[in-house]
Image (cartoon, rainbow, N blue to C red):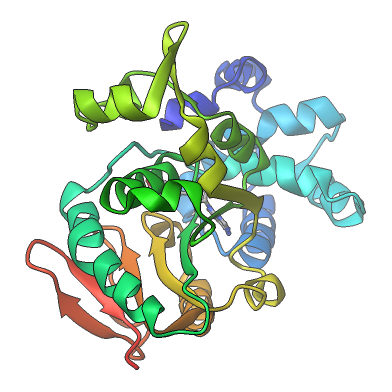
Length: 297
Ligand SMILES: C[S@@+](CC[C@H](N)C(=O)[O-])C[C@H]1O[C@@H](n2cnc3c(N)ncnc32)[C@H](O)[C@@H]1O
C-alpha cells in the first residue's frame, strides 16, 4: 500500500489549498504532543503541511473550525472512533509482499527451522509469529506463505499462530479482504502467485489457507497495557514502523516486545532500523545477508 493511497476521494480534496484547514504555530505543538502521547508517532516541525493535509478532511467532516477543537473532540469521544480515524489518517502504510528478501530467506531457512526444533521440546508445540505494524497484510501473509512452503502441514494445523496487528482500522479491513494489485506482488515468483493467489478482476486474492492462518487485530503499540497481553511470541517482525516513533516510545515499545518474546525468541527490524541507543537487552546475531535481534535463553 503506497503512501499516496491515503488520498481517498474524501481527503484527496484536501490537496486543494482552499480546502486545507491551516494549523497555527500555537496549535502545531498541541497536536503533535497529543499524537505522540497517544500513538508514539513523532512529527517534526517540517511536517506541519503533512498533518494539515491528512487531518483537514477530518476537521471539515466534523465541522471543527480549529485543530484545538478537533483534539478536544477526540478526547471526549468515548467511542474512540475518531481516534481510530485520526490514526488512519496520519499513518504511512507503505509495504509489499516479500519485502527485504534476504531477511525473509533467513526467516524461512534458519530461524523458522530452529523454532520448530525448539517447539518440539515444549509442552505445546505452538509457534507464534507476530507482525507488529502489519499494514495491509503483505508482511504477515508473506510470513504465512514462507512458513507453509517450508512446512506444508502448517496449512491444516493449529501449530502456527500468525498474529498481525496495526493501529489503523481501515488498513486492517483491507488486510482481511486479502485483495492485491500487481505492484505489491512483484517479488513473488510466478509459481508462488499461482499456488497462493487466485485472480479476482484485475487483482489477486490470497488463498483461503493463508487467509485462515493470519489473525488480524487492532493494537496500538504505544498502549503498554494491551502489549502485556501478548506473551510467548517466538518471532516478532517489527519492520519499518519504529522509524516513525520518538525516542521514549521506541524504548518503551522495544522493552514491551522483549517481554512479549519467549526466551530464545527473535526480533526482526527494518533494514534501516536498529536498537542502537534503544535497548541493550538483545543479542545481535549475524545471519549472513541480514541481522536479527535475539532474546537469549
Ligand atoms: C510503513 S508500514 C510497515 C508495514 C510492514 N511492517 C512492512 O515493513 O512492510 C507502518 C505501519 O505501522 C503502523 N503503525 C504506526 N504507528 C503504530 C502504532 N502506534 N501502533 C501500531 N501500528 C502502528 C501503521 O499504521 C502502518 O501500517
